[in-house]
Structures are given as structure tokens and as C-alpha cells.
Length: 48
Image (cartoon, rainbow, N blue to C red):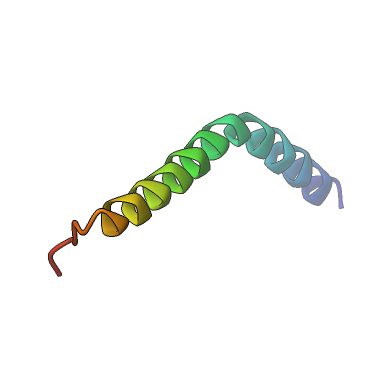
């Protein structure tokens, strides 16, 4: 049981440390999706 509790605490610490990086990634993806919609409105289409 002690090993499980230690593992959960370590996981919580790791997630807290990664949260700012994950947030920046989400912001980047959100902006990129918005840019894509803007380009399509201007008639610029991506190759597929």
C-alpha cells in the first residue's frame, strides 16, 4: 500500500510540473486551428 501511495504522489508531482508545458501546447494548437480557418476564408487551401 505504501508503494502505491508513493507512486500516486510522484504522479501528481510530475503532472503538476508538466501542466505549464501542456497548456502552451494547447494554446499553440488552438491558434494553429484558428489560422487554418482564416486561410480557408481567404481562399487558401492546404494540399492533401
